[in-house]
Every structure is written in structure tokens, then in C-alpha cells.
Image 1 (cartoon, rainbow, N blue to C red):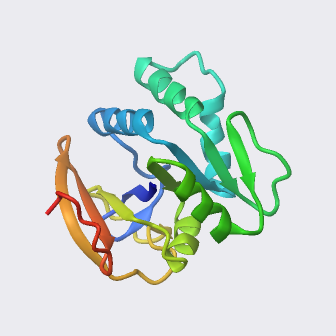
Image 2 (spheres, rainbow, N blue to C red; image 1 turned 30 degrees about the horizontal axis):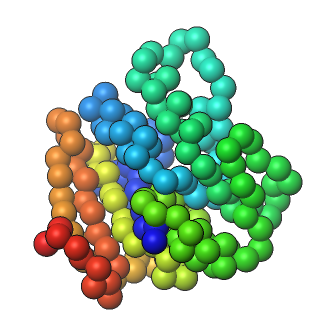
Length: 185
């Protein structure tokens, strides 16, 4: 059975904004490795449209950006949207039955499936479908913007923490009612 993992960069005051701060070289390499190992990604419309950037080649890209693009293009993607009529390569449109589609996806696949975007994560959290939350905490304060938790924060239990690079801390949480802790204690 697949595990749904919601992870994003977050400011100290709880906001996500890829235009205000982004990953340094060490964290970007970490994200490349994660993308290479994922069983796929589930996107909301807004996040998917942002990520479509990686579908096109850009001559100014360095080797790291090319590696991320290759990993992103290779993995299957499921896009949750009522407004989109079609999606790009290696992507499947998920319509009205979000819960049924994601439960089926989790049952059919193995490995980690990334959940991309706070709004989608809110819906999946409300349905009890997210297995793990990864906060990549950056030492910046934004003061406003899109919060990591788009709805009420679910009860969580800290499982691990890890420093990545010079200034980012990855905090890994599971829902507090989860008993599937594995060997991470």
C-alpha cells in the first residue's frame, strides 16, 4: 500500500511561497533524490500548473535542474481538478470522487506518493488520507501568504527531524492517531 506524504518548504511563521524563498543547492539535491524515488505525485490544479514548468526544456538549466525535470517527467502524476479538461504527459485527471480515487491509488501502488499543494493537502487531511507531513523549515519570516496548513492543523506527532544543508530543518510528522510508526521511533 502506498503512503501519501505532504511536504513543502515553510517559513518560520508557517507560510509557503516558492517565489519568496526556495531550496539551496543541498536541499534541491535532496528534492531530486526524493522525486527519483517517489511512486508518483498528486497535484491540485494550481500546483500542477506551476510544476508544468518542468515539462519544457530550458537551455539555461544546469545539470541539477535537468535531473529534477527528468525525475518529475518520469513519475506518474494525478491531477485533482474540476476545471481542467486535460493534463500533460504522464498525468491523469482526477474528477469528482477525490476520496475514492485516492483510496484506490493508495491500494494499487506501493511506495511514497507526494501530495503537492496546501489546498489539496487540506482536503486529503480532512479525509484522513495523508500518512506523513514533512515541513522543510527555512529561517525566513514572510508575515503573510499561503499557510502550509490551509485548514485546521490536525493533531500530529513528531517522528524525526533532520538538518539539511546550512539552514533548513526537515520535521517529519504523522497523524497523532497513527500507530504505523515502523522503526522510526
